[in-house]
Length: 612
Image 1: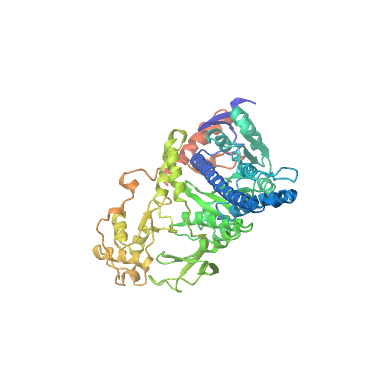
Image 2 (image 1 turned 90 degrees about the horizontal axis):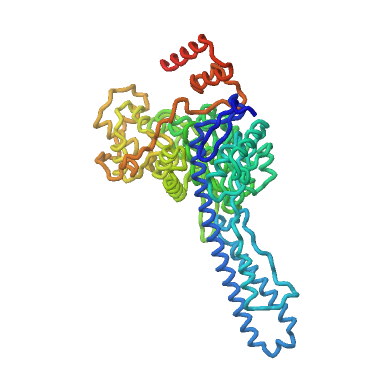
């Protein structure tokens, strides 16, 4: 191996050797993705340990309670039947042995009746299976306690991680070297060059990496299908759409495990090719200002659909739109009864083609009577044929995940963990800003409004965000920002209230007359029912805004985005994607220098790009 053909790249505690000819895929911009994943993994390991200890505590109390009852009952029986004990000793021994088994069995049955989320057993928990045999002497006071201790002595093994598409192996190496308490990390790839590079990088990172990381040449789909419920964490970060991996990934996660999934095909998910999105994800996207959040919700709905086929369901703990992709972190559970709630978490979206107002149509509903619950189709339609605000038609998209996309308790734990270990995150500033914004979002409000879009419809000047927030709060509703868009506003106020606030704003700041058939003219022709109060509200600024904490940071450098697939030759046409410096550096290294004419041509291309 000629080291002159390689570049050493260091990220976090891991170092990798990258070939200069783009043989194996690597994107520097994904440092945000990797840092965030490590932060979530650390929180998951902590939560997993807490849940395991709570489960053992419940089991101990349950088994001891049953054993105590059985022991006291047997003692009373022994006193009342004392003359007959000696003559029927063997029969008494048999009955006592059966009663011990019944005690343990009833305790296990009591534990199994706990809620579906709580009674999941992680991979690695072991239960003692020793039972009292016929040859053993009967001991009412001591033996049940010994059995109880063995029953609850399950030790939690270190979590196993699967990185399904490893490429250079940088992500797997960072997991192994930076996440405390992690077990085996399995890195897969179906490209020989990538597997060779991954194994080379494992050796390059020393004994810790060698002991924890293993690389395999395999099709990730086949590998995951042949290893069901074996991994506590499965990481999918493909080049493009993850849809072809979801079915097998769902099956390879243990109950209560974590599935991490990235989708970079944002043109498809955001409505550029709606028919392609429907074929891949089973949902039709809409091209609204909220399209990136809708992309997150389409991905979650798709994962839930795959999970339901195996009587499983998901619980999102964190869903993020960053840079040029979306990334979701969900926990996977198995429960046929809890799975029935899926239609309650999905909705179709109606979006007006005139004023961009949107309304959600839930797929299902429930009726509770006494202790029973009936699942029924949702009532509809939620909108008339024409928009009640501007009179235009509606486009319909979805279904999307309309339940919460974050677990606020998890988000708080992740933020605290990141701040306490800020030196260990190369992209600390960026992920801290994103997580801070997420922590202040309204968790139960799907999608969001764009204040600039509202003003563009009415052709009016835009109020300050603080003024608009205050008007919504003074009207009795909640409002917050969103991490997806710096201009986005989440609110539980209905659209007629939003338009009434804007009508009141236009009365104070008049606009020029428009054509009567324009959506803005139709909206302004109606008198507001609500009289908006634009006085400054106390909660009009979030805590981060009040403290002037940075929430939306610029890219660290130019050309911060997706890169070429591995194996593609870098040429002059990739200047717009990689930048002239990267292209010139690659070609200089490849050709041993660059002719003056080619250099001049590259500079001209860069100049023309900056003008356009």
